[in-house]
Image (cartoon, rainbow, N blue to C red; front, side, top):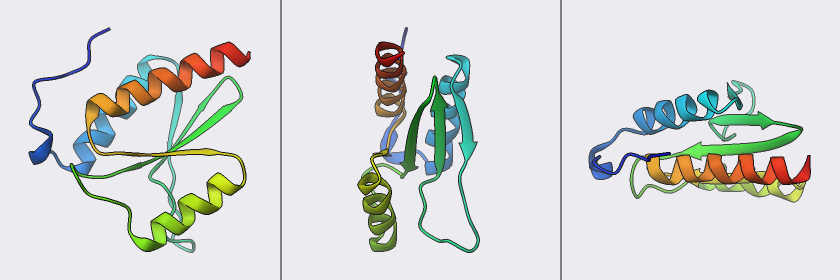
Length: 108
């Protein structure tokens, strides 16, 4: 499996990173849902489901960090025992998805 290494992540938009990682996840059989709520701000961008396991990802442009509200929501979700990752480049996103798949396969 090859991960893109030729991209200049410093110039990539958050949406491009999200699209590439979601495309990779779907190609590997992972369900990928846009996770947003007009009534509940600050939730992670995407929800990934695979073999009974759940992963949330907050996508950011290169070098950006979650807002205070997003950090608070991430902490709430993690306190409930779920995994949340903050991803700011395609390679890390693909590695995260592969790790998620591997972990789910080991449990099931």
